Length: 491
Length: 100
Image (cartoon, rainbow over all chains, first blue to last red; front, side, top):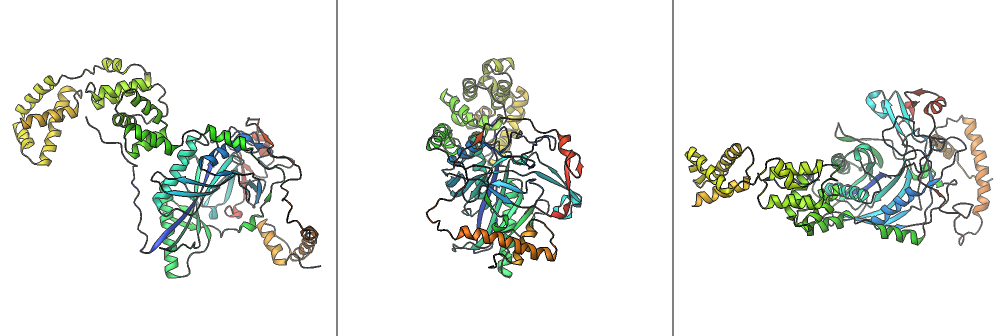
């Protein structure tokens, strides 16, 4: 049976129409948890999902007398991501960001302020649009509080429970320039950044586990103007879908305020997914209010040029380059290529094509039937052999799919699996005589097929194909049936 | 003594630290903190245009540890320190509002 081309993104984003004459101005702050074994300043394990407060020690609990020591792997991962974004890597110092809140038991978060590790990079989106990256700095994550009572809302809670397993987990915060003008580009930016983070091994970037989190700085302005108006920072965005909805809602809210009055106030707002709106947080404290100062317990980070050169040397191919390579090798469309690069199956596809498989068929087979975490038993040679069997009609698409399933579980020779399953290539003469029989049995349907109406022809093709499949228990190739029908009607 | 710090600034800083100060305390701390800032002003008066800012008193950089797991504390010991433990977590009052 022929199958549809690989689907594009399930929900095609619809760009909302802002009122005539208004333009969106968005900058994104993306927090990514670094994939280290331990926390940033202590040897506690960096792990999601442990029992509360089991991965804690005097340092990450902020107990008196404890001292932080920098995790060298975290610094290395941060520099790798910086270089992948084309940033310059600087001499950097850690700073204390002071605030009073129970998610940090020390009463300050150790971060970077005026001297971040990475600055001045850029990120090119899949369609070529370039977003500037202002900085990518190292900081520690905070603990996690659960608000109890008041329906989980912060302001109505009866009390909060705090778990410090996440306190001190290493993060990199990537701050974009306010270059983003559309919701689609905001989504694409996060997707591309996520792909780079995964490709470089910096993080597993699981949005649902909070290992990648996005805050959006949103403002609006009149078309043609280059001013930056008052912005609001939207927090609590948990998915790419939420990101689009939150930006749209916030932009419309601000335009309304500019149209009817003096515009919005600068503040932090929370995205409420259920209500589909943003609600005000407290007015943002000034940077001054955080009383940043250099962390006296940690010395500066000053990577040698040779260290940075070694990082560049070892940089794996980045997603954009891998997509281009896969596209050139297979001729597949951009959506399919994006899916395979994201899954890390591009090398397999290219090797199969090099071993003689058809590019487009290989990509279709992988996109549709290899959405799994572990495909280690499928090697390029057997994949190529399978795709070739499909190409030259020895296997129908649905049979090829089943044989790929066998390869996935057991590895081995696709021809042997096909034989075991009894998938013999059907002789067309056999198929032709079956069709003759079916046409004789259904003269009405056949005359509708031949009648010249395109809709009828399609419907009747489906009718005859269905009959053939039934008679052959799904063994026939739908494409071949269609060809035989067409041939017969024109003879 | 020159006014280094206003009363309002002391009230503001106390609010950031969630400290409740009595009226006479505000006056006293304005005085005392002002004196400390006065001392810092002596340093401010120096000509330092060509001096690199000191990040750290020790001439060190890149002091790091290997990314190797060490043992964490026993949770019972940790929670024994908590004023109000609940379900292995620290129970805190809600009055703090949201994270700044």
